[in-house]
Image 1 (cartoon, rainbow, N blue to C red):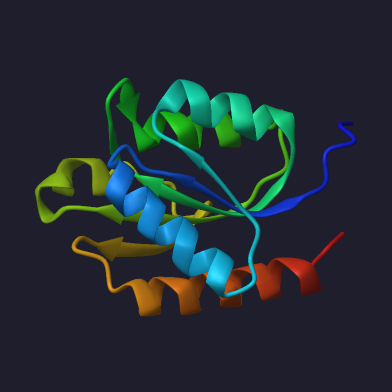
Image 2 (cartoon, rainbow, N blue to C red):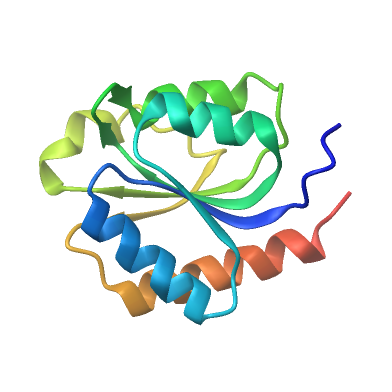
Length: 131
């Protein structure tokens, strides 16, 4: 097991402006964050250490959020709570979501205040339900 401390949130978002806005809002809310812009970086960070919540964009430059979900589900890492962010045109990908992993789906453009509230609730919930 890694000696890296658990980080509250991993944001997987390929739009740098959206990722920066989420990082800023979550850090302002007192949550620790990491960010990845593609599937490869997301997998690297997920292997490095545990996260309580993952904010997952479905369309990424080197694959999809479904690829990240398969990686998480493979069982080689602790399972975080997952929030999927997507544009309405991603409907075919929504049908592929494993709802046992995905706790919330929100559509773009994001209501940042609502996303932060949802993430805080999931972080709090993950802390209460530690095994």
